[in-house]
Image (cartoon, rainbow, N blue to C red; front, side, top):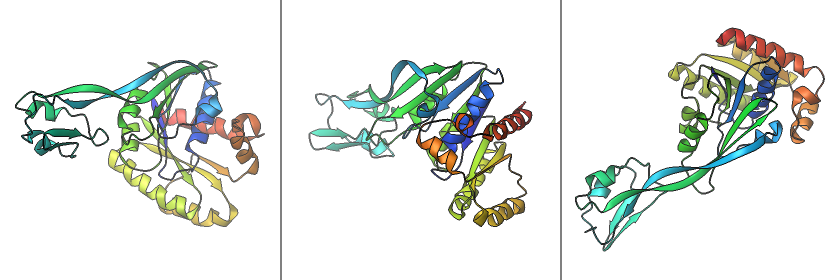
Length: 282
């Protein structure tokens, strides 16, 4: 069973919710895996504090041109939809940042001047904490394609475990990749007008992907309660959990501490959320 924590707006509380929920589920005796798929800015490890036991590099295949065989015919360039390879006089240039690794340029080259070679683009770190299986991906700085690193992270879930996936923000390709194969999504709604606007985009994405979902309302303020709760009522959505704005939570988060350990009473809300979630996905 794979459960993703998602939501279109950055900073809505996805990592906060994912880490506290995973640790709550762990106290129920469940076998839990945690995957940090927000590979451009992973930070779940700051709260879970796992003991990292191994790391590995993530490689993609990119073209390498043998200048002694290439005659600059341009077949590779005409094939490539992303303009990642360009014959320029006596030299053929390869732009690795644009390459999607399809291998088509090597297939169409009439001189067999192109071969695919591995290029490292990120790192997977694996470890454990109190029985929790943990893995996170980190995309190398300057590389624009997080998809392969996210895919590599997804393969690190312990077979048979209940898996919590912390997804990237937004509704673009990295999020779609992170949601591949999930059973259920907890969509986090930051209780602000901006958060509500982005939340509607997230719902459209989930509806298009046909993934069952529940909603968690985060950082609710009295000033925004009427607007946000009214919008959810119009969408016929009842939140599975509501977390009010609380400086104690913000302080614990800034200190890298789990709210269920630092804020009295909040553990009960997470217990109810965990029970409701298990009832929905079982």
